[in-house]
Amino acid sequence: MALLLKSLIGAAVVILISLLSKSKYYYIAGLAPLFPTFALIAHYSVGSTRSTSDLRETILFSGFATLPMLSYLVALYCLVGYFRLVPSLLMACVAWGIAAWILVTLWGYAHGH
Image 1 (tube, rainbow, N blue to C red):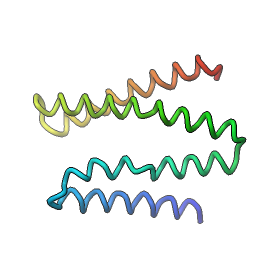
Image 2 (cartoon, helix red, strand yellow):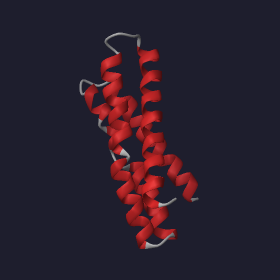
Image 3 (cartoon, one colour):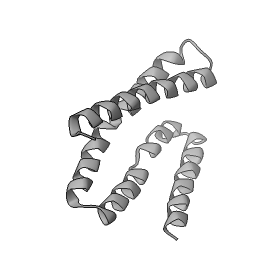
Image 4 (cartoon, rainbow, N blue to C red):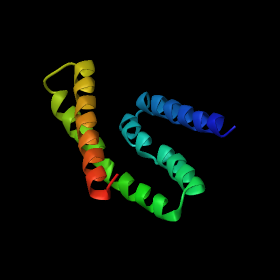
């Protein structure tokens, strides 16, 4: 049941983004995915199954996890001026992946994981 609820929440966000992108407020479609839908799910899942210390570490890591998203946005902003949309999106995803890999690697070293 919990998995179904999580899936429905994700689907609702996708529908909201789609509707917003077609409206005169299209730019708000960029804000909708940043609503902490999945962070709520992740923090609830960790908080209900692990210690408060583990939850606090997850919350702290979530803050640093905004850096890969920022790298994606900066890369995409720059790339769309030079490439078509799909290649720009793919390259921005690669930038996100590299930043995420660096973050996870550094986090592991800093926290002994």
